[in-house]
Image (cartoon, rainbow, N blue to C red):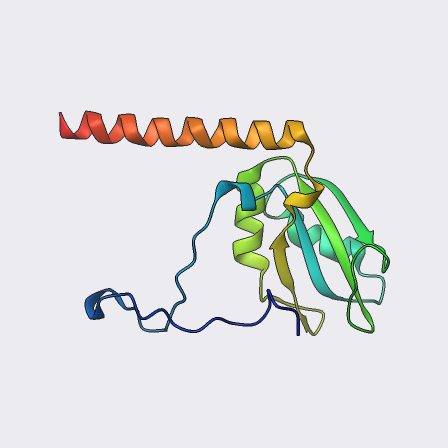
Length: 146
């Protein structure tokens, strides 16, 4: 099993009142790890690209949907890996949240961000968008406190 697929142990650093119903591992997450490019793994190799595109298009505008070759990314037997590129980062976030662990044609999809497929311009746009979002939140909080 791939390292990123395996679950992590529960964090012992949370106070008892902060623990949820199910155990959670605490992870540091950065905007750099997010991407409008997502990899969809464990897709049955039976020619379902159109169905997969329809599933992900429900979450936002898809610019590209293509199969990744075996030489680029190893996979399990009888499955394919697809790279899906969304127009907006927010669409990719929504699709990842909704489609990860989704039952698709009898297989459980595994959806991950793929920042390694970003261009330098993609990264600049993403960081500028994040800066704007944070600034808007901070200004809203300051206005609410005043």
